[in-house]
Length: 424
Image (cartoon, rainbow, N blue to C red):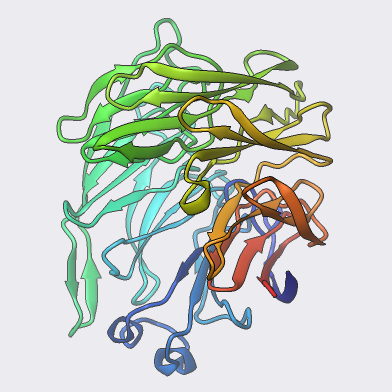
């Protein structure tokens, strides 16, 4: 891994760069779409360039050339720090979802933006009377349904939103518009209304018409998006911010998930589980001891990184990254057999990670993992055995999750920079 470029962001009260979850979008636009967007002139005609779209803690969404790190168009300025990851319309339409994380400039919510001209087309306030919790951040990434013309996202106010977008896209104009009609799912935690137990920070996972998410109390839910009614729910465990992973076997969905150590106190277990997606029944469970920092400025341990779902030569594995294992600074990456939960390998980390690991294969189909950590190291591992093959330092905490296109990794740090790294 060789650093190729870096881009310095501005700063807000939360700093710059990106934090958790902070994963960029890497996209190669269709040629006809490039011509109608507000790209700098050189990029409208440059063939096959890949654009990185990065939402930053400084409140801006940046657009960068993954080959050079240069701006491809003017940033979108939301005004509030962004802690989550932006989402792009899966139809290839120039529509961008951006959730806000901190109400630095007053209100807080999420916006849908046109990538033709960078203007905001719709805004959903996060603080609303219908919600049981009065905190309106959106760290969850949104899912666009290309067939239904809908957007689904969870809010830290405890509501699950599905918006019928009513998108109109005219390439000849060019113009794009939305007229969303939101449906909202609200649930009750007995005796807990209005407090911090409500709040969806993980991104919603979907199988067909079933949406899966967990909350700050660690209760998992399955909701039918056609009716916006619950199908099943599990008892609470502990705060769950990592996104649930769905794997389908013979048209049957299974979920892989894990908790933080938060409500348990200063020490407890990251509870790693496989769950039947149709019934909510736990099929196996593995407890990994972890620590957390409590008090006025808590810093949680346990599972904050979304697990890697093994494919190809590691299709039998699910790989988890647990923070604050062994001591407050340490961490653990552990590979478990999907069928049984039996441990296949582990890597004891000197420095913990919230950054989600990203997997990829070389041309021979050999699997690898890229994992950032809390002191700024970016590691390359052999995914078959957990052996560390290479590492570089980016100089500051990597809370954000990397994204990979061909041989290029793009990832930001809490040090106010976005980095491009080439794998050689």
